[in-house]
Image 1 (cartoon, helix red, strand yellow):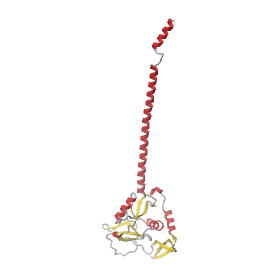
Image 2 (spheres, helix red, strand yellow; image 1 turned 180 degrees about the vertical axis):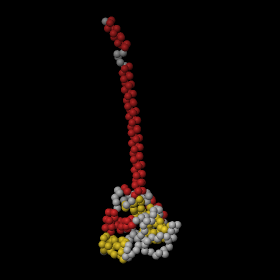
Image 3 (spheres, one colour; image 1 turned 90 degrees about the vertical axis):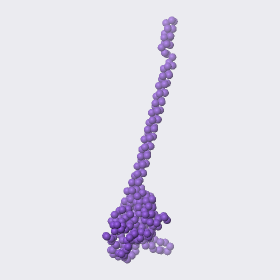
Image 4 (cartoon, helix red, strand yellow; image 1 turned 45 degrees about the horizontal axis):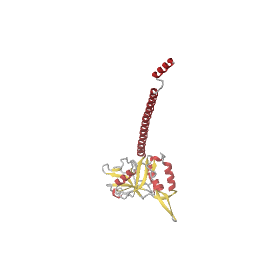
Length: 270
């Protein structure tokens, strides 16, 4: 089995550290270098600015709502887990119920992992650990994402190598961005990180737009046909009324043939 490589001594992580100054609490970012935490000079505001700069603009309609954050080809939202959420499948169903094509988070590269970590630092301020949509597949003897995407990136924290993998899922440490194996029965589900691809959202929006356009076109055609029929009937009625008027006028003319002959006879008699 090809096991995921745990982060080595040279790997650097970032975490959220809270500093209290009187009654005011301001979050700061801390960095781990070779296992020793060093307080970084930058605050979470800097992470937020970097996050905003890294996220390309695809328009406000790319994500399901303002609660979602856009990054590359996906939208992300940290949602409060309902009380009835008891398993990873419940969490997945909850994500699907909040957006078309949504699922519990899967992380496919280092940039996405950094984005998620920075988002917890600057936007979400969520729990210490968040559940990932990952499980250990005993058939393949390796980890897999629930959405069937390829596990092309991992960020495991240092753990004991003899960890039992049966019924194992994964969580993410929201401060450092490191991953940790945990029992699927003990996943933190008080808050759920959901992901929806922009493609699915645009497809959904395009479907709605197509239906709206078709409805408008159909309504326009119906109104146009109805107006044409009414205009035709009106013109036919006007034309028929004009012919009747001309016919009555012809029949009532005082200068018919008989009247003309009588008048001519009277002229000769005179």
